[in-house]
Image 1 (cartoon, rainbow, N blue to C red):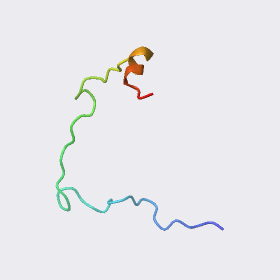
Image 2 (tube, one colour):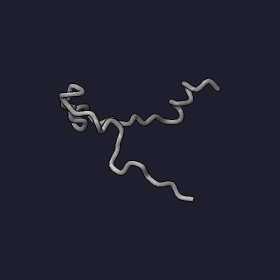
Image 3 (cartoon, rainbow, N blue to C red):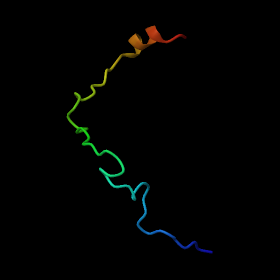
Amino acid sequence: MSLKKQYDDYSLFSDLKPGADYRAFALADELGREPVYGAVYISLGDLAEFLPF
């Protein structure tokens, strides 16, 4: 039993037109906005001070 597709090129909200149906806006660049996250390494001895057991 196979199901026949009813729509080939449909995607969610593909029938909406920018400017007519919604206000289009440019997105900010995702890369380079914030400094790269630096991991903080902690020793097991320091970690033991904060653990409740």
